[in-house]
Image (tube, helix red, strand yellow):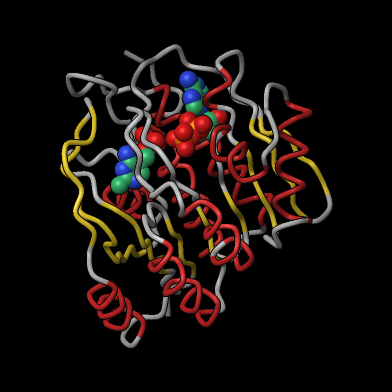
Length: 269
Ligand SMILES: Nc1ncnc2c1ncn2[C@@H]1O[C@H](COP(=O)(O)OP(=O)(O)O)[C@@H](O)[C@H]1O
Ligand SMILES: Cc1ncc(COP(=O)(O)O)c(N)n1
């Protein structure tokens, strides 16, 4: 019988489909992993920014989790936007007990600059979710916030990735280069080793949901049983194509192309 790989995302929503739960599910589907989702916050957002946020109650989040895990067990689990310390406490117990690869995308602010997490949640993330993570996937501002380091170079990214593992207890960390502008070399620290993930930088404003998409692709590959190094390398390739085969949708900073990976080798518009 065919093995079906499954992945669960626990995150907030984006009705325009570029970020959050929607981006995660599209990515899982593209990677041929059966996607499932638990919604923590409903957002009215689009490519121009976040208009309104409503958090789900802890009871509803837990009821969603129970509904999924008592029926279909996920081969890997990912968290994205987790806005409050109470949600983090609840989820930490679940990700620990699930005992499958856990990908923690420490979402703090949207590219539009809108905050997606309470100010006082930042320390909670370190204490609750990060110690259980198979891999943490911060962008530069998130890595700075978590470690207290100033990150301006690849060497700084290496220091931050190592610190997330050695001081906060995650198994691995990949610090993403998006905010650095001069390159898109991400830095992975896993199994006591630094790896640089290079990709051509695309000159575009359409970067809404890049972090969600990248971490969802890593989740899908870990769900299939690939190693951390293989999963992050496929994730990097997937996000690079999603960015370079841009769709130019929306009135602001548009979404990436979740089927870009399938267009490899074809001319870009
Ligand atoms: N302009 C770009 N060209 C190519 N890759 C990019 C570009 N911007 C971001 N990336 C890549 O997209 C992924 C997500 O990074 P980033 O945008 O920093 O995350 P986030 O969405 O969490 O802020 C990383 O692999 C990063 O290197
Ligand atoms: C629900 C949700 N989760 C995460 C992001 C971050 O997206 P970006 O990669 O653009 O910073 C977002 N805009 N919305």
